Amino acid sequence: MFTQLTKSILLPWIAIVLIVRLLTIELIVGWFSLLVQCLEIVVLCEVCVLSM
Image (cartoon, rainbow, N blue to C red; front, side, top):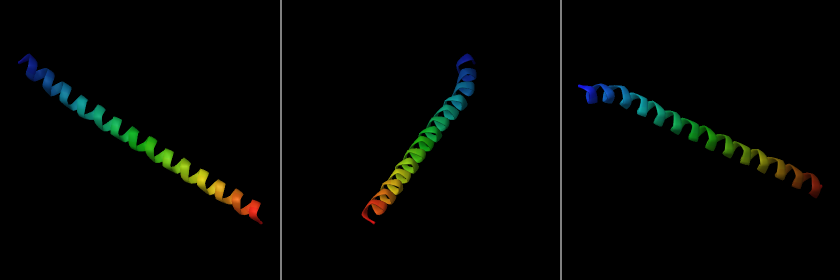
């Protein structure tokens, strides 16, 4: 009885925590790649300006 209750309470929480972790990792990776792209664009612009 007790273990069944704790399982029914714990399993959804574990699932939620895992999903949140995955989402935050996705967000961090997404923002990181976005930053890298912005840096690449800035560097390209600087190179273009310098070569003019």
